[in-house]
Every structure is written in structure tokens, then in C-alpha cells.
Image 1: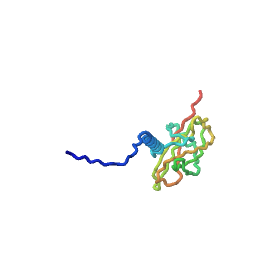
Image 2: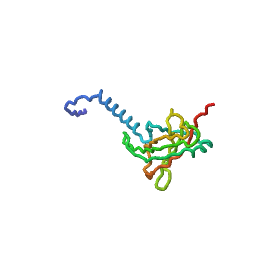
Image 3: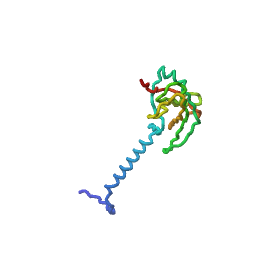
Image 4: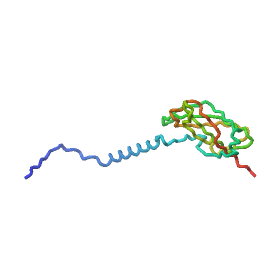
Length: 171
């Protein structure tokens, strides 16, 4: 004959089963959404007049590039709403040539103390739809960067023309 050991426990309320898992799922969903939004590899560009692009830079564009003068203005650094530091490169471009342009692409290079490039990005200067960039005209532009490597030497980056889109000729 087996003796059965029986332990008396005070009455406990039954576990809540309905709402606790809903709260847990809601919290998990919010956490996943925050991770996706703040993931460092997902660079979000500010809605400005610049976009990543690849404009033509063949022999005609390379011959015209020296006619475009770029003047860079002082850099500025600020914090965005996600507490990320944003570096802004403002500039002014002058069309010293004799052709109207639909767009111009610039490449910005940030270097370290040894002069090695730590970040290189190309961006179109004008957001479509923009009127043609006429000969002799000057326009201001601004390019923002959210993720510059910490090895950057905090000096003015090199800014050069890397693409030109000529305005289609009317025949």
C-alpha cells in the first residue's frame, strides 16, 4: 500500500490568461518596431534637395565639369530627433559654362588624419523637378550626412563634380 503525501496550500487565485499575453505581444511589437526604426545600418536621408544618384560622367560631362565652380561654406553639426549627429555640408555651385544643366552630381569625401578617405558619397545637387541650371547661374545646395566614421579628421571634406545631366536639346 502506498501512502500518498498531500500538501495543503492556501487557495491561490487562478492565473489571468486573457490580457497578460496581449500586453506582452503589444510590448514585443513596439520593441521590434523601435529596433527597425533605429537600426544603425538603415540610413535615412533627410528630405532635402539631395538624393543619392548616378548621373552620366562621360567625356562630354568631364570636359564640362571644370566650368562648374563649387564653393563650400562652413560645416555645421547638429543632433536630429533620434539623437544622431548630423553633419551638413552647405555649398554654392556656379554654372560657368554655356549650357543649361538638368542636374549636377557631387561627390563628398571625408578623410582621416592620414589623408585616407573614410567616407565617400555621391549626391545629386538639385531635387526634381527643378528648372534648368542656366549658364552663369549660381545656386546654393546642402548635403547632410548622418553616419560619418569617428576617424574623420573634422576638416572640410573634398567636394567635386562627379556627374552632369545636360538639359535635353530642343530641335
